Length: 331
Ligand code: P6P
Image (cartoon, rainbow, N blue to C red; front, side):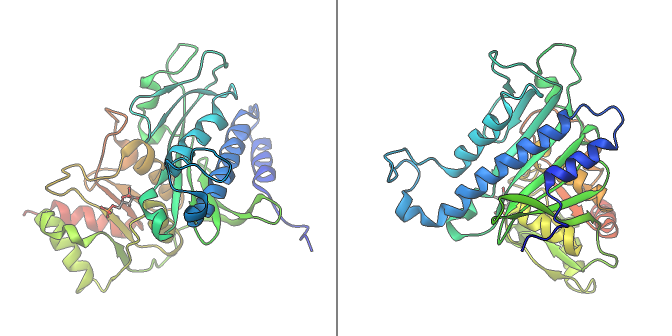
């Protein structure tokens, strides 16, 4: 029986819009379009396990269509969900080397959408949860259509950010600066329904750290001391999935400290500022946590290039503070 109190994401967005006196509905439409893209991507991700039947990337499927790599497919779905709406000035994607203008045949709008269409796609083959990450800014340049400069804004200027987790269930988690809200896809009605209103970091947080310790020998002395402290007298447990959206979601729900540090082979770490660290930082801060590059807040970092990497420490505020303190101690 359909419960009468089900709040779909569309209903939630419209209710939020009504609280904004000057809202035009553009923002509501934009987030609804992203939710639709998420459902389309999730449907294909959930079929990935059938690749032997449906064919691997590069093969032809049973319909004679070329099977695409899922991250290429997801990238096209995000672009096509947004390119014609008249809401977007330009986009940028982990999959595209340069920023993405809106095709001349479509009108441009005020928003800039930057996304990682399918993060962690290397985990698909082993059925580990993966995700889509998105970051939304307002255009700041004067022209009618967006430029690269509109993409290179600090995380503090985001108007919205969030992720979709394709896991045991498909969840969309986002913030527009008024708290973090989680929606779970109900396949029986094909709608994201509100399941985690106003997500906040638990207090006290779970003492769990999350890092790939295979790189221990390549870390700085401060990073090595930090992890050694956490696992000994810090009394921390360890969890690491190796899929950013999955690790992020666990940290958001249970608390803890996620780290992707710099190391000798990747002096700026592996994770990207614009479409991984900055959107996650907005969600984390709205939930009462912190996100840092080990020295300063992620949200205050001025991007210099689209695919810029930064070291990332995010999670419960006290744990990120501790990480910064120990990293700053003399080597
Ligand atoms: P490592 C997945 O490939 C990814 O981009 C993120 O989702 C994840 O946090 C990270 O890389 C894992 O990297 O070096 O630990 O395998």
